[in-house]
Image (cartoon, rainbow, N blue to C red; front, side, top):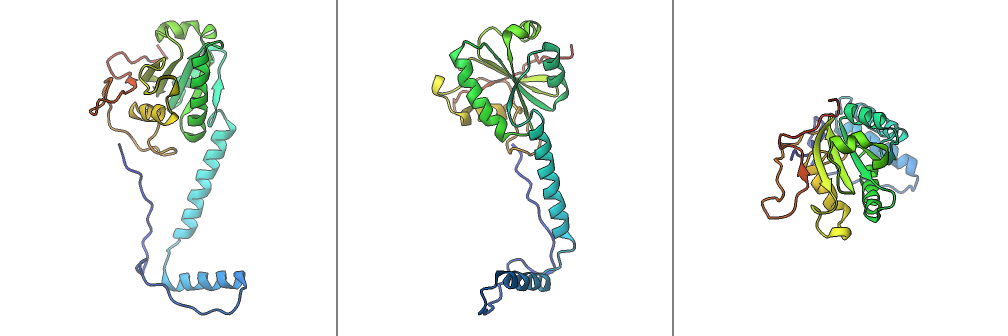
Length: 226
């Protein structure tokens, strides 16, 4: 797994310099803030870092807002099969829950996916009633429900059939589902990060003997544009 990149700024003085002790008899917070800002300007040559960082933060907030205003950040049902094919083919990362409305376990899966969708804004979470997507049910060999399939650039990278690969059965945790999806590269290790993952081979258990969600990296990846 790749580590989170930490932003840094070069300064003309050490950031570990012992702060000055300043006596103040006034409780005026505005005056205090002005004095601290002046002191910071005296100690550091930020070289435009503050303005650059503010622009970066604004861009991140704007991107998150655009995603939340679309289908990102939530679990969205798609009722037209060709729309589902188009969405999964064009998105960088997407997850589709194939479900049946009367199945209790499908409702359990929905609850977990809704939590993950709200956290992982860089992955599109969709669901489809199997009655509405017969072509995909056949092509993707969906036989047991719930069935969750993860795609990266339109190619199958993960397939979760029922709860067989999740510890705890019906009582599995959202965290265990999230970890398995991260191992299959469908979710970013750090939500919002575009950092790449190392390749994950398609095994059923990791080195410690724990269960692992099956990946599609076994020579049978399904491209939905076929």
